[in-house]
Image (cartoon, rainbow, N blue to C red; front, side):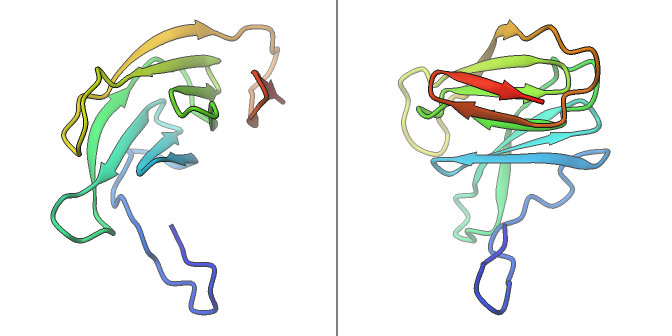
Length: 131
């Protein structure tokens, strides 16, 4: 993540996040999601080490059989949709709190109907728009 001020300084980083290009990033409530051409979505949370630029990997979602091209979150932050494989994941926090809380995900549905690759995705109201 980068500052938008004139110095454009890096304010957050996940380092070597994936084995291939990172195609998408989404963020909500201190959690950062990265989607990659390696077919994986990784979930990162700020480190408790005191360096707010460091993130620790919380989980890896591997439901894609192709590149994860775009990510979008539902307004409540509990739903994560990814374009490429048409996968919709839902997060279940298990009622915990703090940095070490469990972050469990389950496959909610697969979006079907596109004939080619889905490269863009956005959450609108109570649904998603893909193109």
